[in-house]
Length: 116
Image 1 (tube, rainbow, N blue to C red):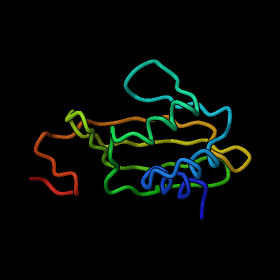
Image 2: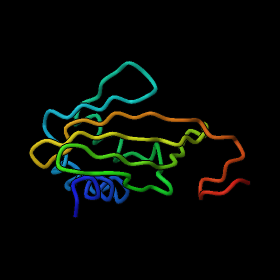
Image 3: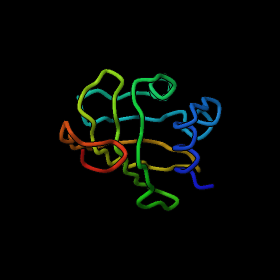
Image 4: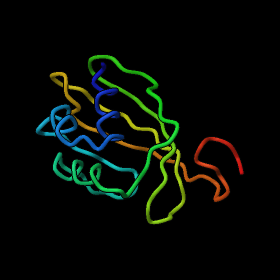
């Protein structure tokens, strides 16, 4: 299984041990929503929470240095769902960093992939 596939499967199944294993100790997460940079422990906490759900995810591209995935993300707090593109750098077979970009979706967007 690829590094990104392992990462995404661990996120979806809330498998903290597998997620911790595939994330580099010096990992940085740079989200699209603010100017903060999060660490590996921050990312593990977010991924183990019920704060978001990924829908219709797919790996767009991956090699030994970089990986790109896309998904629709809905949020437990009821905020607008977003189409999220994530770019991950890979070092030593682990995810070293993740940076996201997102587009808010129309309020009537059905997260299973069709308009309401």
